[in-house]
Amino acid sequence: MESDKLVVKKALDAIAIAEKQYSVKTFGFLDPRERALIEREIRGKVPPDMICEFFGGYDGAERSMMICRPEYLPAEYDEIITAIEISGRDISGLNHRDYLGSLTGLGIKRENIGDIVPDGERCYVYIKPAMLTYVGENLTKIGRRGVRAARRNLSEIRIPEKPVKPISATVPSLRLDCIAAAAAGVSRSKAAELIKSGRVKLNFEEETSVSAVVSEGATISIRGSGRFRLSEVRGTTRKGRTAVIIDKYI
Image (cartoon, rainbow, N blue to C red; front, side, top):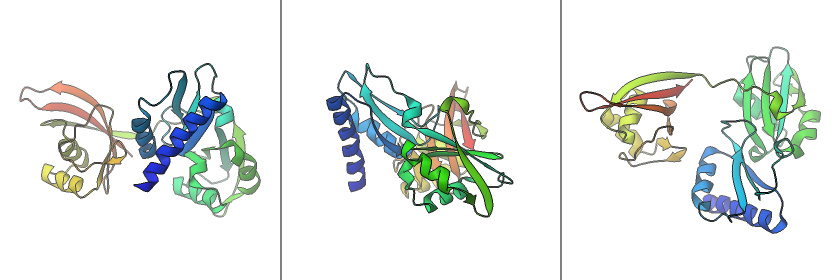
């Protein structure tokens, strides 16, 4: 895909500029598929005295920046990523889509916005520093609710853990069709049909091979069923099947 080639080119350009200018260069925010693509394509292409890391403002962030820098130059994350806290009355009913819609409604491109984390009567949003003043001055309402946005240091924020529902299962193997069937609660033949029709992503990339191996920690997205993570491979049962724990994000 041309868009994938452009993403890889921009990543390689960021590495080259950071090396040439002895500076910190960033690219993103990237979605998980873009990050996986870049990680695969730059493997072996990063100069030995350079560091390329991915960070979205907190451990486990879904959307992240690629940060390229000489190894002797530390990354000042608060200067690279800005966190804002959105607060207001009666906003606990707002969801991710409400916040994203209001931000993009201001003309802010999605690539300038990282994770959006609603947390009761507040919401944390990670953005590029250049967006801070504009958001602070212009984000005054979400729907009919009045809100205010204030900057927060990254270290001040405690991100709530994503709720999950653990699924215990035994599977014939760690093939994608077996794991997808257990995760979605469907037959293996139905899972194979979903995979072959392009409705399943493995680690955020479309996977159409039913025999692809799912490793512990891998993320599986099944259209119509949700997102899952193979959180634990527990070993082999007496009948020769593999016991697993699959977390479903809820």
